[in-house]
Image 1 (cartoon, rainbow, N blue to C red):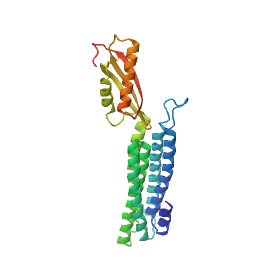
Image 2: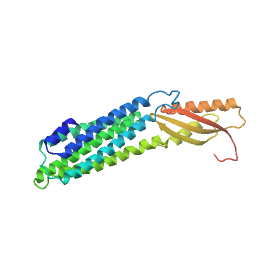
Image 3: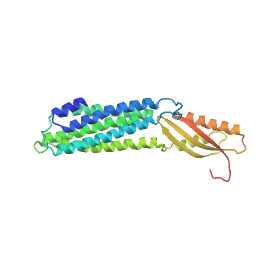
Image 4: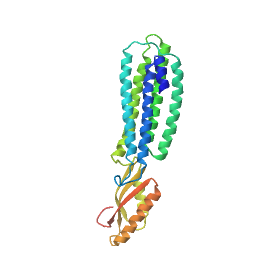
Length: 273
């Protein structure tokens, strides 16, 4: 961020300065993600019996909001620079941008792979922050190239590039907000977890059917609420044992499931399963 900022000021390129601002927000966002993950992995306690997993999507939301803020700042300053006459950007700024684009794209691929492996919305959000940085750098590269090739009258090409980049950043921020908000509001996972869970439960001896099945994600873990139907003539103890077998079977089938809450219902032939 410092290198790009200095290069942008010395090289008369606001697109590069805007890129430096976006990179600075990357650093802040990474710190927020790290802190959010640190809280999310804490075990349940008396005040948080369900754990601290919500800290992870909350960190992702903060990162997305930081992207929105960075985009708004870049757009505002870009418009201001477009209406203000200034010098053509210096050629050396292109070298800086090439190095930045390559570095940030590699960072995006690495961090996103890690986030995908651990199922972390916050880590993947941080990865997209690196991709946004690479995009703004690419836009700046194109804008500066046009300004240098076009010469007089094209000095503001890099400012227009920065304005375009701000729109791309807003789009990426929107992509980050959706999964984080879904997790915070206990929306069902994007994949078909319910079907798989019902299938596992039905394979447990004594289970005749299933009714409600709710799945929600909290941090790295998933929580399941499931109604299973058993023979109504069973004793409470037998029904309780079947419930435990269902819990164990679901957790063994998917290690990411931290808790399974099973409600046992008696079989009623008149009720459609």
